[in-house]
Image (cartoon, rainbow, N blue to C red; front, top):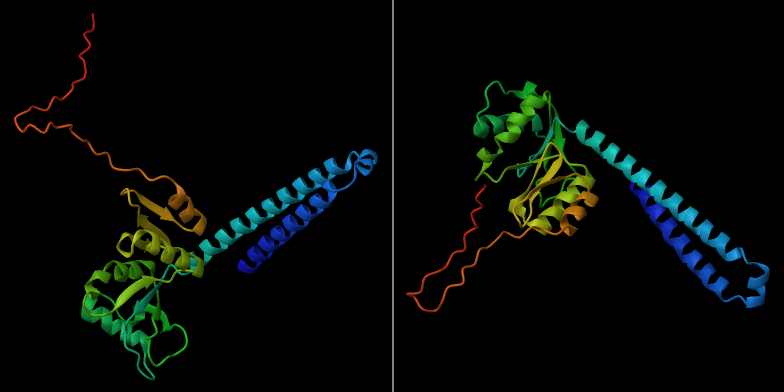
Length: 246
């Protein structure tokens, strides 16, 4: 899907470049040629407008399709969590490791290895990094219990995160850069953040994030009293006039 978007963007850019060059050459034609072809400029403008509209429509449709596919993929990952910071061992049983961690730190009743459908390390093995463990639970409710108990991992070096798609992961990282790590979080695949004016926002795509970032933010109202330098002077506070109904 990303390659299709890139191809459309490149196509639009190439078309605009060529049309601009053609229009420049058209404007350089002599007046005698223009006299014999009075409709050439009009036809060119109409053709250019049609192509630009068609490309814009196609691009919007591709973006819509991309968002829908991303939502479906995120829904498919609904039962999955990532565990970071778990020391990696050779020939390890990741499901047993996760079950032990949950029992030692999260204190969830009725949780066992049967609560985990599958688990594995994500990415290629490296000597200097512990790969995160992808854990797919059998039930969404169990996954949510583990997720909402994540604060109990504090001080252990182990953290949890949702298994976001690449698109959402990039949006989440960008939101943290713009608004701060402590003011951004995810829930059910959606990205939440608090803007500088204190308002809370929820986004799923880069376009939605850019729309919030570019919109004017409300500044908190600050009431300033015009106080005289004389400490004994009184501050006059204006009151609204009282309207007496007859």
